[in-house]
Every structure is written in structure tokens, then in C-alpha cells.
Length: 338
Image (cartoon, rainbow, N blue to C red; front, side, top):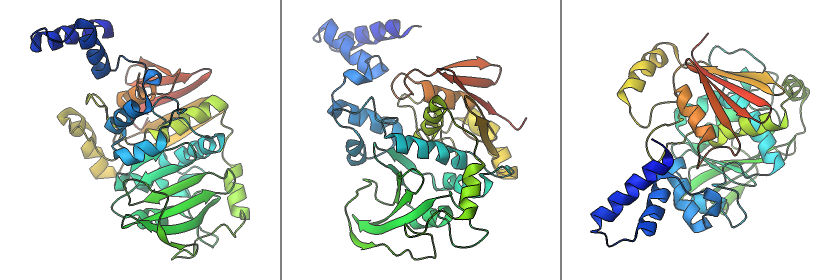
């Protein structure tokens, strides 16, 4: 059934349940809003905030920090060029793990999935809400001094502070200047006290330039085209979404919708072998192949969704595989080791 027919059917039901007290056009507007038939860009910021919350799991204070009058859509992709470039690089860490042995294997970000973080992407920073243990997450991600250091090359400790009783660790990526904040504060507040520029562990700070090892690691990353940068960054922004109509979910660690069929297919291989993830490519052509969560269909839907997807992105299906296309760039999605 088409969206227009769905809206018409729901509008008639709304009128019927109101005893025809609600005019048809008003009922149709309500039905369009409920079914995602209203263009998000036509909504006022105060309407977009609760809509974003339904997908991201943020609290309203966090979503409100990300949406202003000039924000495009729900703000998941509305960010500076530096932020977009950093997020695309971050994708190569978040979506590679276990038996993968490529250049980003030691960046150590695939472990983030086990903390089930809520992503709160904003124009000038990416906020990762890990209520359970933000400093533990940072410990796994930051580079330390030494030849066998792990972490994303160029990521540095900038400041640690406390807000609303929760610790926050602010990191800055030297090559792009982008900011990543890992916090236990659901609001992702940037104010706070007890600020310290000296990390608890021997992490590299803003006083440390890129090391020779980091330069080699960054040089090993293949070129990423402009549209591919948008797609890869979009994976990060949609790292842990749940469809407000409960039709899909993108968590890498479990199925938030607790669909028996999905868990029956996914859980055994994750428990026995651990999830395997491989995201790689070059230029306009990229491929993401993995075991475990999420469903390939779910990820394709999230990237192209009417309300929360990347503007202009579409997908096609071939068997169990999906191809997301943005302009001349393609991202192939396949759940399986092959």
C-alpha cells in the first residue's frame, strides 16, 4: 500500500474515532505526521527535536543542542566539513573488528559496540553518550606513548570535566580539528567544572604532534571521495538508531526491537565466534560486510529513510545484499563472512 493510501486510511480512522469532530484536513495532517509523510525540512525546530529523539534515543536536551533554525533535517548529517571528514575516518574504526587485519584494525573502536552508546551528532562535534563508563571508553580509544600504541591516529585528549554529576572526556583530532566528546551525561552538556587538561593515563595530548607511526597509519587509509565521505560519516551518525515505527534498528551489539527471528539468526554466531566486521574500499566504491547485528536491510533503510536518512541516498537489493547509492558513490551491505 502506498504512503498516500496509508495516510488516507489513518486520517479516516482518526475522524471516525473522534466522532467526525476532527475536520478531514486536520486528521490528514495528523496522519501524515504519524506516518512520516511530512517533509522534515518544513517542520519547525521544536517539532523536529522530539522526532529526532524517537530515532536516536537521546534525551530532548541533547537533541535540542543539535537542532536550530538553520539545521538541515534532523541534523544527523548537518555538520562542518572537518566533522564529516573525521566521522568518515571514525567509521573505518567503528565498523572494522575481530578477524579483520587491515590498517585500521588496531584503532580499537569496534569495542565501542559493547557499551551500547547513544550518538548525538551536532554541527561542530560528535557526542557519544556512554552512561556506564565514559572514561573506560576513552581509555580504549586514545593513543598512548609507545611504539605499539592503539587508537585513532591523531586523536588527542583535550580536557576532562564533570557536568550534572557525570564525567566527560573531550578529544580532538589533530588532522581535522574535529571534536569527539565521550560522556556519561545524557544531555551531553559542554559546560562543567573540575576541568583537567592532564589525563589520568599517559595519553597523547594536544601538546603532542602527530607521531611517525600515526603518519604512516593515516597514509595507509585509501582515498575517500566526497560522497563516500558523506555515506561513511552517515554510518557513524546512525550507529544506534531505532525506527520510531519499530520496523528496523541499527545497533551492532543486539536487536533493540527484540525480534525473535533476528535474534535466532544472529545471536548464536555472535556468542560462538564474536562479530566480524569489515568496512573497506576506495574512492567511490565501498563495501561493508559483517556477521551478527544489524540486519543488512535495517542499515539500508536507516541510511535512506524518508525522515532520518541521508538526503539523496537510495538503495537496491540483490538477494541478501543491499547497495546504497549517493550520486556516483556506492556502499554495498552484506550480512555474512563471504
